[in-house]
Each structure stands twice: as structure tokens, then as C-alpha cells.
Length: 76
Picture 1 (cartoon, rainbow, N blue to C red):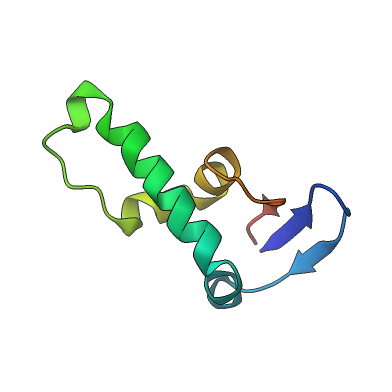
Picture 2 (cartoon, rainbow, N blue to C red; picture 1 turned 30 degrees about the vertical axis):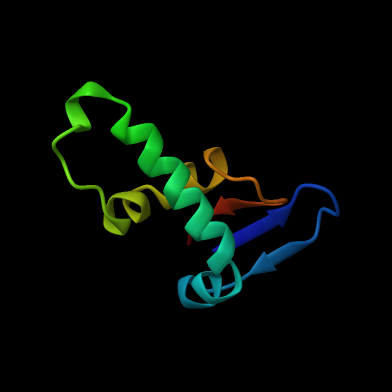
């Protein structure tokens, strides 16, 4: 997985496990944002949303629900 910092242009090449460890706080906040967005949709009101839904399209969800300076450039 390649991540890039929006401000410093620093690039990281890390595994998913390293990503989960290093960005645990951001992932938690972004998952909550994702969950609130999905629950606001009428057809999701009865569905339970868990982390597997978030990780199914991790790159898009992390980049669009993020308040982080980092974004996922690509998942290898």
C-alpha cells in the first residue's frame, strides 16, 4: 500500500497490518464517519455496518471520509 502526505509529499510504502497499527486513530474516526454516512441512506437503516464494509473499498473510504493529512495513493 502506498500512502502520500498531502502537505509534505512524503510517501510511505507499508503493508495493511502496518497501516492498521500506524493509523489506528484515523481509521476509527473515518469508520465512524463512513458509518454515519451509510446509515443516513434509507436502504441501510436496517443493515448492520461493520468494518468489513469499510475495508471492502478501503482506498475510497479512507480518502473520502478522512480528516488525515495522508491519503492512499494505491493498494498493491
